[in-house]
Image (cartoon, rainbow, N blue to C red; front, top):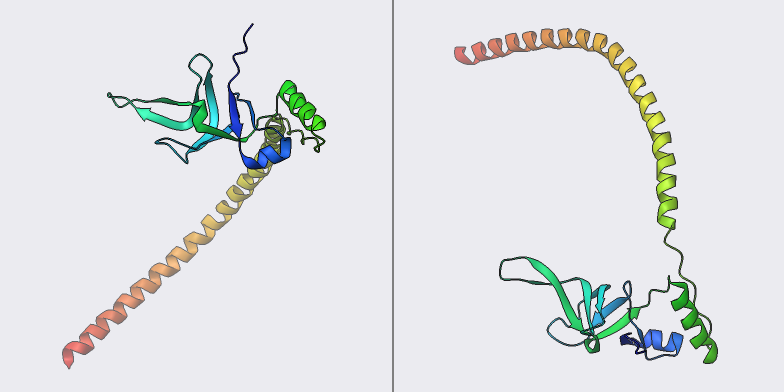
Length: 180
């Protein structure tokens, strides 16, 4: 049976780190385009077409005649892998075996992605605490606003009196100016 894996070149840093020149590409790897009209662009692999040996990269699209943006598939020979996705245990073990054979230090295991779920749980706890604090603040604000409403009424009246006096002063000043 033939293997349908597409081997893609690896950048120099990863070559030194893992002791390999190329590795099969999978969804999740980070790549950079090294030749062609899209040279310099790169991103995360979102699809691998084993039949045509082309790869689609997140953010690299082309506009169709009707204006729709569609994935742009790039030949595997025009790419270089800049970061391997080692979240798969099989893939991590393969790299670990290769580095062991070449007497290189083993790769660091990537942190699993469920950390995001832990953060979400922490955010939910924070949200519950924040909600309780917010409810208490609302109650305090309402109590404070009722007291300040009474105080505002008095200050509004005094401000109104000040305005009346100042308007009388303005009239006197205008009258003084007319006499001169």
